[in-house]
Image (cartoon, rainbow, N blue to C red; front, side, top):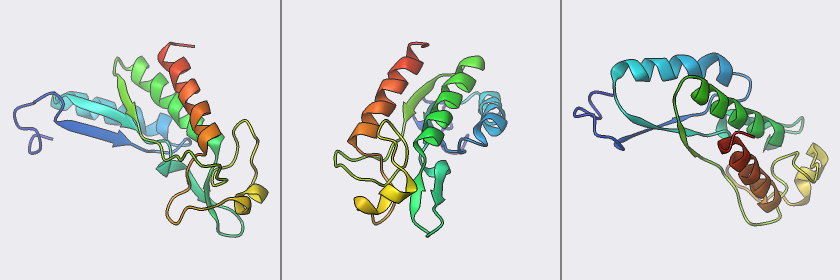
Length: 144
C-alpha cells in the first residue's frame, strides 16, 4: 500500500473484497484491521458476485441471490461494527430478462437457468433481481 500510495492520498486506493457469503465474517474484520494499521485511506467496495459463483449439477455457472444478499448484509454489518465505511458495491447485472442467477422475488431455480441463460462469461442478475438488490442496499444504508 505504501508503494501504491506513498503520500496517503485519499481516493487513490480502492480495495474490493469478495470473500463469499460463507467466508466474509471470518476474513473481512482482519483485512480491515490490517489496512487500518497501515494508516492508508482506502475506498472499500464489496463484490458479492464473484465469491458466490458456483456450478449446478450439470456444470452451469450461477449465483444464488440469497448468497449475494447475505454477503452484502455481512459487509455492511462488519464495516459498521469496525467503524469503517463500505463505499461501494460491484454487481454484474443486465436490464434483460435473463435467468442466470437463481432466487429473488421470482424464485428462479436451477431448472429455470436454461430458459434465458445468455452470459458467455459470468452469470448476471436480471433487472428484477438488480432492483431487489438496490432496494436491500438502500435499506442497509439506512439501518433497516
